[in-house]
Length: 144
Image 1 (tube, helix red, strand yellow):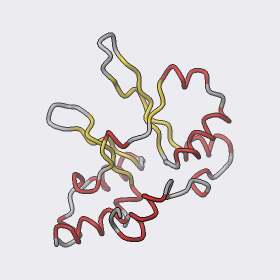
Image 2 (cartoon, rainbow, N blue to C red):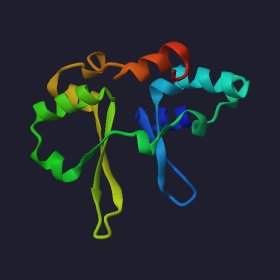
Image 3 (cartoon, rainbow, N blue to C red):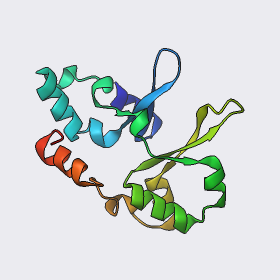
């Protein structure tokens, strides 16, 4: 169903919210189309692919890379491209804090949108694994 929602709306990322309306994470099209997380969930829960839920494969909110809205205001486009490449993510959440210091999502920057605006394919330049732990997860399907 998540993939169908993405296709109908022409997006490659969905925010996943809990019953209280708080962001619990994100799911991207790459993971839904055959990413390692689906395979890991199938193995971990011993279930067929069609029984894997978004909750099993989402990237938890606590693991997401974010940029503050105030920082985004002063970034150049080149700085933004460097940030996307440094983080290695296809999407960056833009956040700010309210008067009670609660963090709120204000938007999403997409590498493909930035690349299109610059006539570049940033997706090909972004690495899948950003560190040794990520490489182990890709190769072993788990951390060491």
